Length: 405
Image 1: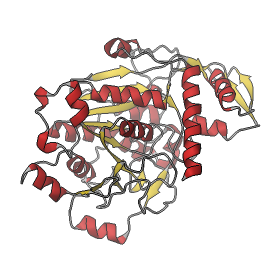
Image 2: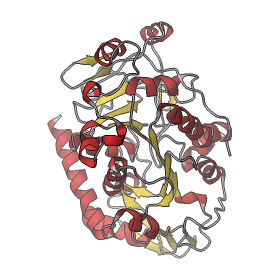
Image 3: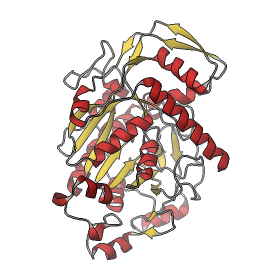
Image 4: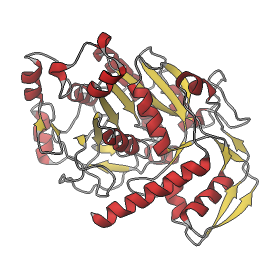
């Protein structure tokens, strides 16, 4: 089903090397993750917006493709790409002139030559995918609202700035500039933000945009990994498989369900996650750490089977590099756990000193059966104790970067 498909265009003709750019702070506005104007990103991400300055508007009016800025200051503009690839050629990666044909690419060659585009690069999941792709030495570009003013994105990472997925033309222009082989779409309105954003824009972004992306990517021959959610299920029984009929209970779940794609070049991943954010306290981890020394309710019968964002990011990157890769719908899940038990693990690992009072209501079980994905890929989820330990290590490393910044 397609709701309010979004056209492509509207990229502000400006990019940043994210840690050392000169982007301005923008006020919060209710959608997050994509960039420029109200922006949207993955589950539990903070809502932000970006205004567009006069220079940006003037450059956009010229109809030029935006450059990508590298950590060393090199500007890979559309014109330099045309010269490198040949006049009239579609822009490709920095190594486009020596890339083998798709039919000859081995997994090793794919790792060397594949370009990855992350849509919504500053979200809860997407910034972790971006960091870990950069650490692997992959050719990765992300769309961002503006330069994050927190340690979290490497200084040499490449970005296309000020992208609002609701603007006409933005999608085509981003895809033409980045020329990706694989796109990971982490743009979306979160459940908590539906009342702020409104039902119409929620459907447009969560349901319409993925279909527009699938169509635009098919025309360019690139693969899409679409991130969906366990909220396509009501949670009435749990252990859901891909064969189970979805039964969402709200606009958020329905919009995410409508944004799931069945096209042959698209992999749709249903999952859920816990992890650090670049800014804000909208996710479970940030919210819990803000309760240090306090008291919270722990829901003993609210069960899910998510993953920590570092583990989920690595699983998505492994799949992005796979040739030819999966297609269709898969559940990517961790060990089932209730929210009370998870909070206790977080409390121990982070030494938060939070008193957790068990509560038997609400009763909801949105656990996913991830055995099909595991069988296809060999993925083995870590234990929750190990994932929480990894979150603590990531948190400590981030705090160190913050002090050193």
